[in-house]
Amino acid sequence: DAGVTQSPTHLIKTRGQHVTLRCSPISGHKSVSWYQQVLGQGPQFIFQYYEKEERGRGNFPDRFSARQFPNYSSELNVNALLLGDSALYLCASSFGVMVLGYMNTEAFFGQGTRLTVV
Amino acid sequence: AQTVTQSQPEMSVQEAETVTLSCTYDTSENNYYLFWYKQPPSRQMILVIRQEAYKQQNATENRFSVNFQKAAKSFSLKISDSQLGDTAMYFCAFMKPRSGNTPLVFGKGTRLSVIA
Picture 1 (cartoon, chains in turn brown, cyan):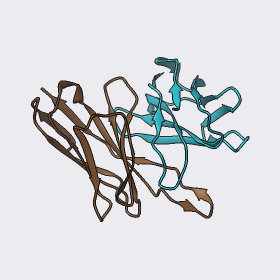
Picture 2: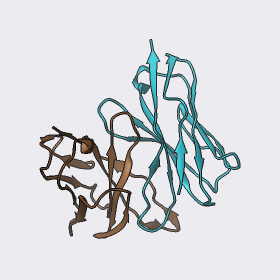
Picture 3: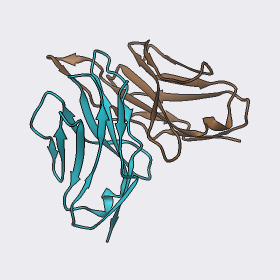
Picture 4: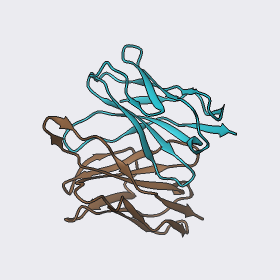
């Protein structure tokens, strides 16, 4: 079975440009979350989507946006890139549902997209 | 808002020895989940172990076990018989469950080096 796949793996952009990162969840997973991990820090939550609806948003500016498609894949868009946006962007997927009263909580992560803004 | 604190930025351990990584958290919730994730140089976050707050028994997964102290809001990870492949960043994380899940709140991580 394929795991969570993210593309591209590495990306170099110039300040002010726009970037789109992509994520394909594990088959059957309906919840996708995006995290930003700055070097030397833990991941910070950006967005969560479940059944194609936004279910949560972290403390990030409006330059960050995302969406989830009918096949549950997701895109993260960042406009007007700043040097401080340089980071590893992680996507995580999970079932996100209650099964027989038990919350399936395990989130599976992709290998991330390393974004460098110069 | 929930916060997770890992007070040990770096640790090292000799191969085959035991090491304990510390984690404390702050929440007003009664029902939640705690996790330890491992991030090797390959960058992919891998779930090591999970603990449900309503369970008093500490979780174990082979060489990995936790010491969950709910009243103290403490959640430490013990790695027994350390192996070179355990070298990685380790992150403690908190989640409040609801339908559709909720985001993970991570600590800043502990860099563990296993020395031969």
